[in-house]
Image 1: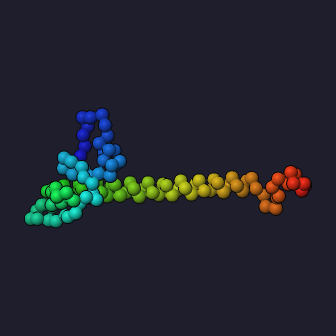
Image 2 (image 1 turned 30 degrees about the vertical axis):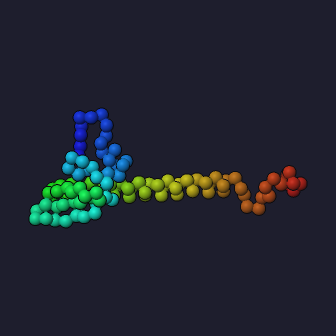
Image 3 (image 1 turned 90 degrees about the vertical axis):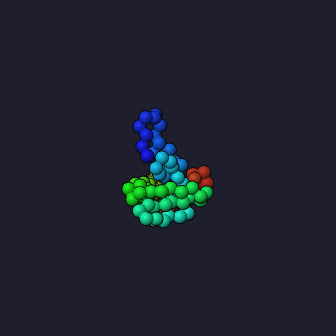
Length: 113
């Protein structure tokens, strides 16, 4: 579902809301309660009872959108782990640079020198 006639990014809106494009709409994938094949058509039923009738090509597009979303989420999670590890390493390096083993902190104030 791509709309180039408007000044907004429809794909960004869908991703932000966790929706998937389907035909001329967008659905919450958690609301899908049934997916079945009837003859050459795939029927998706949503929680509230709405049904979408998909061709093989429509289903392939939906699958591609789900895979793309999953890959983006996996990449974001991996980047978050890398960022967390980098921050931890920076904190450890900062601590190791300021405190030396065997040094009594505030030694002069306490009379130890």
